[in-house]
Image (cartoon, rainbow over all chains, first blue to last red; front, top):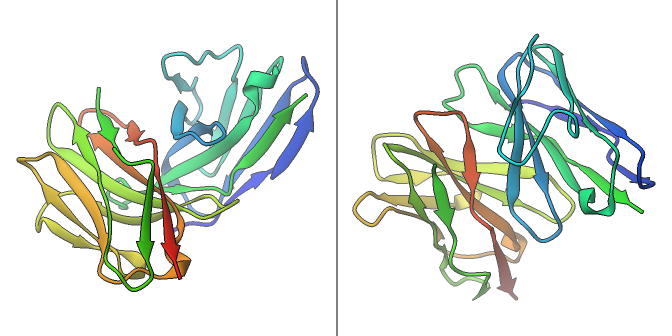
Length: 115
Length: 113
């Protein structure tokens, strides 16, 4: 397994502002992902974070709203831009480790509330 | 695109009784199947997976799951439930053709003392 940390763990933000969430892993990973989990809902994949290139976004998510960086194998950031109350969610980072046979390991999540 | 159905919203079971959480899936090819558990205010924890081989797979905390290709199911089971098993359980499927993991809606399990 891997130890995955996310910062911040929670935040309360005002409408129209932006928040950057950091994800740090203690092992080299093959894949990194960002998910959103709205209250009482399942997980929805936002994008795959690609090292050194643009992230691959899922339908319904765009780079202008959710810019993602992944400068190396163990670190990624997700920015939630121009926030609205509808962005209130838990944002989760996940990783696949080399040789893990496609298991994904999840960070503790960032609980975002937009007022 | 792959998808997962978890038909029940909540599963209630008495402590010591068998626990079953149902999952059916849809993929275009051979599936990779996973179960995760989420405790309150915690991230998701990996429980077990089916990739290939024996249809019955064993995982963490005494859980197991049975892959049934003809019924496209991957039900999670535990012979004797504990109060500490009360949590949110997610089934997920990955298509061999892409990197995406599709999650079911989740099942709240409540184990009654």
